[in-house]
Image (cartoon, rainbow, N blue to C red; front, side):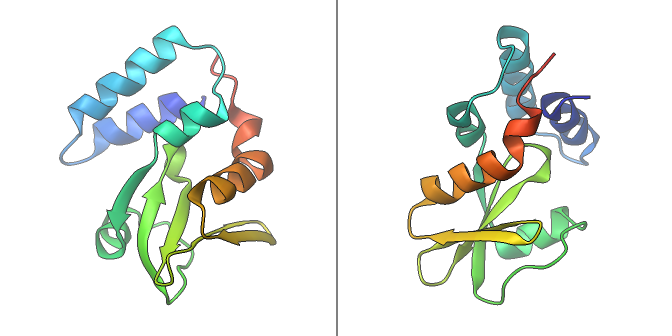
Length: 119
């Protein structure tokens, strides 16, 4: 199952599904065969740390200085830190930058691009 279908299923199973986001995902998968970095970035949603911890219980750990999370498809996420930088870990590798796009590219190259084919 590709990451878009997994996200649609996850969203539908929530106690309060975001129907607009589900429609956006369904439209995207109907019209696209392969995800690009730009597409991946467009699905990012900023949420506060507390709300993230309530809704995403499978999280292994967040840094103490994490204030917000950028959540992407299939529960991929990047931490927003107090010093206005962004941080992500993939396995034993990590990236930190004051530019979100740099950390998104790291995440894409290390992990997400393996799942970019939607068929």
